[in-house]
Amino acid sequence: MKQINSLITTKPTAHSLPLLTQPTELGFKTKLDGKQISKARNYLIKRTDPYQTEKDLLTSMRSLTEYDIEVKPKLGTIGSIAKVNLSFENEDKLNQAYTKVFMCMVGLPIQDLKQRLLMLSTLIQRQFGDTPEDLEVRINSTAEQLNKYPADIVLKAIDEVKNTERYFPSYSVFYKHIKWRYESRKQILVALDKEAERLSND
Image 1 (tube, rainbow, N blue to C red):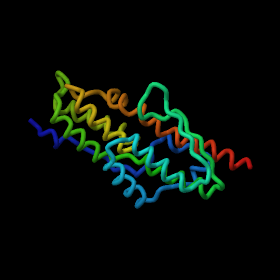
Image 2 (image 1 turned 60 degrees about the vertical axis):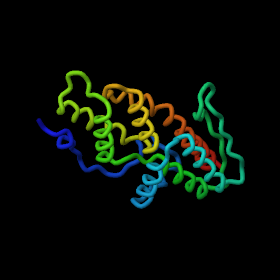
Image 3 (image 1 turned 90 degrees about the vertical axis):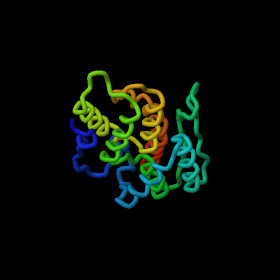
Image 4 (image 1 turned 30 degrees about the horizontal axis):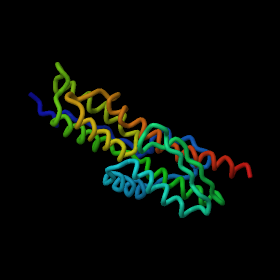
């Protein structure tokens, strides 16, 4: 029988941000270089609470504006943002804010995700009837999807799956733990896009 770790394969992929962070007004001018991506990834890997990551992000953004940053929590939830209102004096300050947000959107490399999912598979059972080859396909396809989301949010999701699931789950189970946290963080980006539109019309 093949060893599971011998089944994990990967394809070279370019570093990228989650797809949903791409369509911005002024944000498209803001690109992270390799050093920024590496720095951001190392930072996010150490974070254990995605909501605290957002609070720290907003705190750091306050140094870029003389205006208050208003954060409205989502009703009925803990640690979830429904809306953010903010203003900046100029495009330079705004693009600095975009850089900060983009650095909190960096995902894990696919190979790293595969190794973490492989470790997860040693802690919970395979789906009934799954062969090691089936597990390979499940891990590879799941890693391809998880790569699209911020590293700290994904790591939190993997940890929650480890603690709540008996069998290695489908991607949808991971996404259940990711979606609300990602939508919360994305509200900061939405606020920047609105401010970008305002500045472009002034």
